[in-house]
Image 1 (spheres, rainbow, N blue to C red):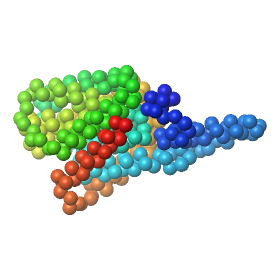
Image 2: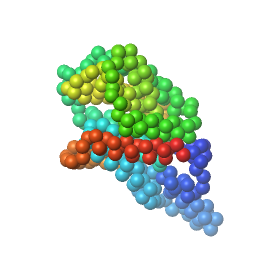
Image 3: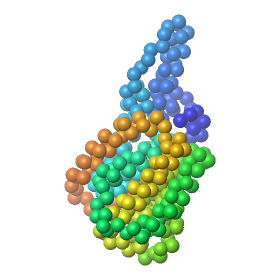
Length: 290
């Protein structure tokens, strides 16, 4: 993340850089210039966090990941919708999105695709080509669109989805041609914001898939779609060494949270829980629009 990105989101000064999570950079520059002016030597400070931070500024994003994967462990989905809007308040989308996509991929692979015999391969075949095209469109936007515009677009999408979820309209039966917008939307929005799941979920529900077929079919689409996204992040150099450092800390957090979420029993009804998550998304979406 270079100076041009910080300027594009209105960040300037040492204190603002610290909010992004890189206080050690400015500390080293300040201390180095001071020591050199006195004829001293520059001391090397060891890395203590994902961004080599000298304080606990990296802790909040890790707590966000922990909360998001607690929810995924409880519900089987929702980690991207929760984690990425909140992470985007601290990290650039070009870091937050690949991080959560890879963690989601590992979480899905770890759970395995249950009931393989129940996969609706015909629906997978309809969605996948347009999903892959959407991935290409999303990767292009990462390189061509200003980061501030991406952040605000993320906020608008999250806000729209949260209001849509609170409204809870009934899903009507849809024809097979709806795979075109669902695939394009899921692939492109998933690549840009890591939250393409609602497009696939809505399509599969509208196609009338039963509970037994829905879960393995969605998991199969996600694994194939996420594989293409991850390959795209690596191939277009969106993923870098900083992402690897975050993964080193994020994978253990995800595993612990998934385990705990899978063993949490709550008296909160699924409807009330879903509305609470939607309200959280409303606030995070509004924050991203600033």
